[in-house]
Image (cartoon, rainbow, N blue to C red; front, top):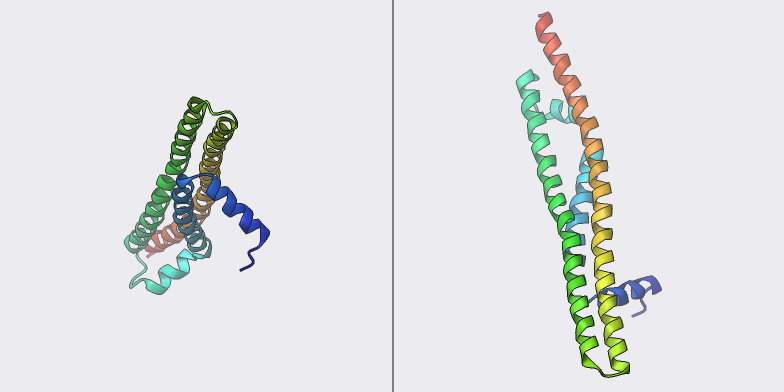
Length: 172
């Protein structure tokens, strides 16, 4: 099976980072699956239209309930994403500790060429896992901030609908 060269390179990096890289890949999958889904949900959401299609009445309390439910959904998903974002650098740090332990084990071996290779391998594991954990977290933070901004715009549209409904009620 011929894999694209970039995929082979990525897989070699994953393997050289040790077992923590598998955990980081799984964490990244969970995080980005959640964040991309939430991004698509919020960016495609037309709150006033969805409310009008689903609402039994267009009273102010009904709009408030709809806004509250929507806020809970987005808030829960963002909280989940932030937990995963916080875990990514911590897993990277765990990989750093494991790599440094391997490095010290190699230094203590006193075996010439093998010592140099053991030290280099330990440092490589430490750096790759740290870098991967930070990259996962940084991009995740950027995406969650974009989602928050999009959601605030959508919520303000619903707030405008709520205010218009309230003004109609006052005019009657």
